[in-house]
Image (tube, rainbow, N blue to C red; front, side):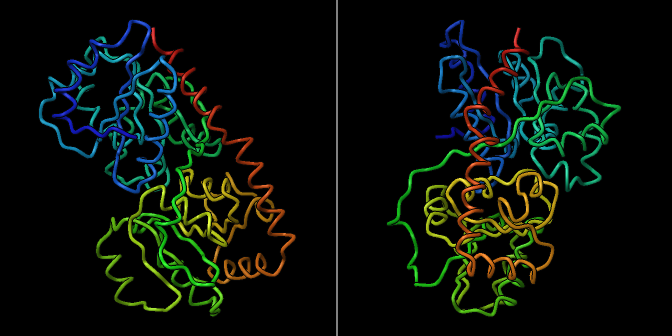
Length: 360
C-alpha cells in the first residue's frame, strides 16, 4: 500500500527512518501528486511497490499537493536521500525550485519523469518552472518514443542528460465482485477518469446519445476534480442507460473492467493512459480518441480502435458487437502487446538500473 506523507509527517519521520536502513539499502524520495483516482497516484503506488520488492531500495512517497513551510528542514532531509524521483515535472518541479534556487551542494541525483499534462496541456505559467528545473536533472524519463521526441525538440536548450524511455506497466488489484453495483443484462461500456476538461467526459455523453441502442449501459467512474463540470453533466443529462459511480478504489475499477464489454477513452490528450493498459491486460476491447498518448499504445483495428468523433466510436463499438472473430483477435493482440511492451518486470528493472547508475 502506498504511504502518503504530508511534509510535516515527512520531516518527523525521515530523521528516524534513514538511520535504520542498512548501508547497502538505498533510500529514495518519490515526489508526486497523490490525488485519489489520478494517474500519478496509481503510477506512484506501482513504482513504490516494485522498487521495494528487493532490499535494494526503501522509498518514501511524499505528496507535492501538500503545502510546506519548513524549506530549510526539507532541504536538510532531502540531502540524506540517495536519489529523488520526481513524477510530473511541473508539479514536483514547482516544489524543487525552492530547494535548487540557491544551488546548494550535495543534493542527491534528481530523476524527472514526464507524466502527461506538463507535456500535452502545459500552461504558460508552467514553462518557467520546467525550463528552470530540467537542467538540474541527472536523469529524464518519458513513457514513449513519441513524447521523448517532443521533449527533445521543446527543451533542447535545457537538456543536460539523456532521456530514458520507460513505458508504463500494469499492476492489477485483487477482484471483489461483491463490490459491484447491480448489473443488468445490458453490455457495459466503461469510462474511467477524473471529471476534468482534459478527460472530456462530455464527449462520451455525446457518444451515448449517438448510440441510440438499449443493449448497452455506460458507467462513468472518476473523482470529481472539476465540480462545475460534474454539476453540468448531472444537470443536463439524464438517461436510464447511464450511471455515474464517482471515485472508486482500484480493486473496484479492475473488477468492473472484468465484467465490461468495452472500455472507452475520450481524453483530448494523454501521456500514457493506465486504464487503457489495464483494460487491454484484462481482455477488454478499447475504443480510444486519437491523441499522441493513445496512438502510441493502440494500433487501429489491431489492438483497439482509434476514433475522432462520437459517430466513429459508435461505429467501432457496433463492429465489435457484430464481429465476434474481430473482437477476439483484438483482445488477444492487445494482451500480447501489453505483455511484451508494458511488462512490469522490465519497467522495474529499468528504474532500478537508472537509479543505481546515478547513485554514487
